[in-house]
Length: 404
Image (cartoon, rainbow, N blue to C red; front, side, top):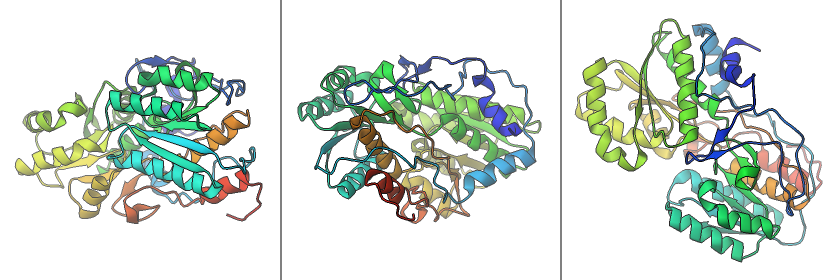
């Protein structure tokens, strides 16, 4: 294992640790997955996501190693790393429901589109219910989904806030699959999720740090912004901080908490404070790109140019693609797979209906820069891996042997 990878997993090797949900509630990733009737279980596995509460930096990060990391993250994603075997999907039309946390947010909408695409390919019916970004809205949508008694339910809302209807669904034999419904990928019996589809948050944070190292030629000064009420955001932050501190010529300046609900009001003053403390030459990394339009406006107002303060993001909404393409402050982002996550969630439903364990795998993180901004789905401002995932899943679901 090379050195950058040891940095990412260094803190996981000693124990399996308690994990937090995306809202900060506790939950433990386990080896157990529940089938449609709660009977299937996955084989034991070591949780590959470290506890970042008290890391000890014992490795160095050289510029060459960071370049290797970045080269891999920016490369084409043609290789299929997902499952190649699994149960056949029902040829009888099934109804599945996707409870979106907020259909006005592009990532949630794209995941729902993937669910619809997969259902259409199977001859199934997919219903999308919009939680409209509120706990009350997602709770009502989940309750409506359970009342429909579908073959399966998928949700991008916070699973910890939906435990009553989720448990009702499981009691009725309806598997529930999360898409970013908690902080970590994999099954979560504590939250009654047969499976949670997500990327590896440690890798996302690490790639941000590595890109700052490379772009600065090993001299990056970095501020990390996050909303620290979210466990996944804290996780990414510590991964970024770890790599920057492991770079001998780099400086980690500070971690700045910005509640998403207060970003419009708080960011102008925060940016002014950063410029007063550190001057006008540093990088900002983040948990989520939604901060960056506000930060870009504040930098522009302060007369800071795009070659002075550079932004490296995560999530990859269209605004991030547009800023990168236009060379305006943001120089890189890591989008989540869009429609692929919907296909993964439907595959989990298929496996749960068959009483089998979920397919646990992770699509590698992808770093979008100006050099590759129109690749891997980037021409439509989203990340669609070029690995023909839809074809591979249909081979499994319909017992085909099609070359993908």
